[in-house]
Image (cartoon, rainbow, N blue to C red; front, side, top):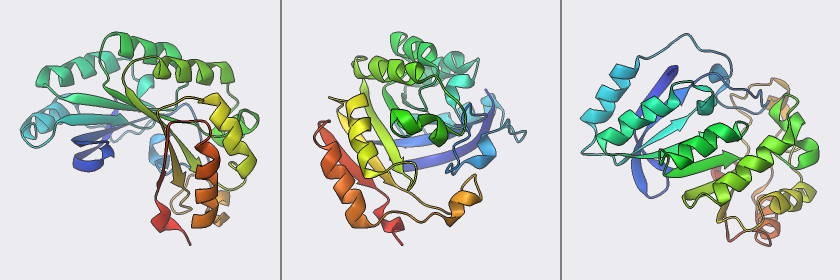
Length: 233
């Protein structure tokens, strides 16, 4: 595992659970609005697996879960082995993913190695590659959406509402992609510390605009939540 960061305790990253967070690199996308830019390429500041597992064991009386995020965790060749070790400690696992490796996600689900999946939905089909910063095969995204929605485990889909990349008309198109989903989270855009210098000049939507997006999304999914409205300028 290429582990590049660790947070001992989080109350917000795994719904309803206290978790530790593990950050991995690299990522197969180059989203211009990414806040973990240091994890897009292979980060050489690696933390050894045994140290992370030791830290998790120390906290097992205070946490009940571990979140694996990135970067893109499914790029890790030894991800399954590492998740087995976390399971052996007796903890739940949440995976954060961009959904571009559906076969990896399917294997993790089939082997009962994940208890919760959060998948980013970058934008509508027409803007997906632009939002990812690379040309992508949208069929892979749609396949992972289907795998997650039929997995029987808890999940959410989430979209960062970046002006230019996600407009009002895109919300309905995204809604069609995830129609019937349990939970869809709209995240306010924060233009600080983003990967692209150009996107630092883009300011977030107003609270009212995000709420309008949520009303559109409610037509397609069971529940809609909004995160980070405190970042409205």
